[in-house]
Amino acid sequence: MVSSNVNRVLEEVVALTLDERRELLSLLETPPVPMSTPDIHDLVIEALRKEGITVSVPPPMTSEEMARYDSFRPVKIEGRPVSETLIEERR
Image (cartoon, rainbow, N blue to C red; front, side, top):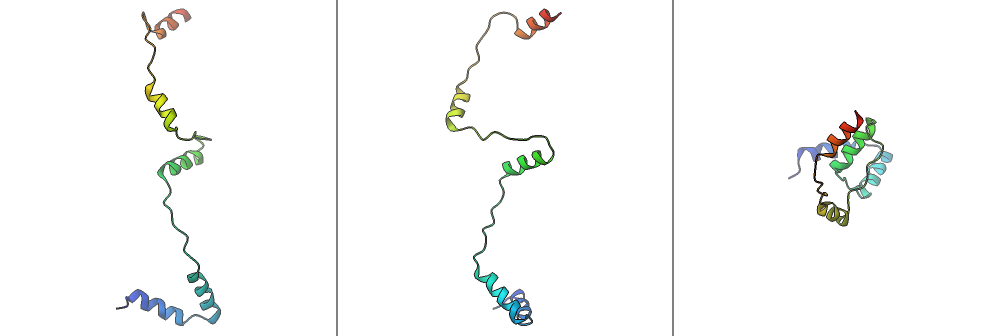
């Protein structure tokens, strides 16, 4: 059973000139270009660039860099917080 869309297309093809049919045949013989869905990460970066918010974005961290980041432990300092000392010294 042929759908109504196919019947309409066939009617349109019959109405084409010889050159138009050759062009259509050429288009049908070429393999379709695969449509890839853009990555959301790329879309966000492009939007930020368009708005002038950023110029460049560093590449994602490698697994080694991520492991180093995850293993980071801050150094404990005794006494008052450094921020309080800085504020006091600036007065």
